[in-house]
Image: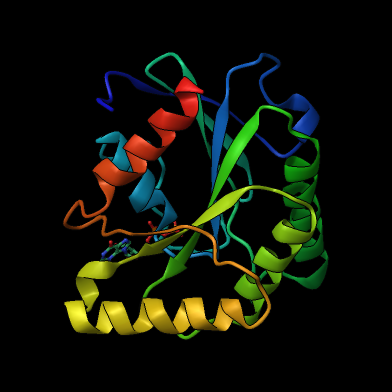
Length: 197
Ligand code: GDP
């Protein structure tokens, strides 16, 4: 898919205020600092469409972007940032879950995982919740440029092995790097195919 246009639409913290139309949407979510803003900028080819933040946990909003005038890319707040107070954390987790449970336009979610780390409890719990609620998603491993190919393979395999301890089949995964552009075409093609259905 070629990205012809990519524009910011709206930010808000309330699912009921998200755009009221039938444009299909694809949501990106992950822990703070996982590289979500960088990935969104990389796949859209826009340097600062999503704001990369030096202060994790800052962007606790649902951000809609319209791509090629025919689909929404949704940038969801990062979860699991330790310095956000318990109440705030609870609140934004609530609106993340609200989003997934209520947003009928949501076609597919991409859960971002930093490829360098061992499986983290919060990510596994989040994916578990997605599975239990039948929310369709794929895993997007980020920051692949930080590892050598062998280490990428080892980490991905170990991640999938962990998932298979509780899942019957593992979700589809992508390996990406915002620095090198790895995975861009594959992700865009995947979205394109779903848009054609
Ligand atoms: P967000 O909080 O999930 O939106 O994460 P950001 O996109 O702001 O990235 C967090 C940090 O990771 C920043 O310092 C980025 O420069 C860095 N980063 C993000 N993606 C990549 C990547 O693909 N490769 C490398 N080497 N660094 C990355």
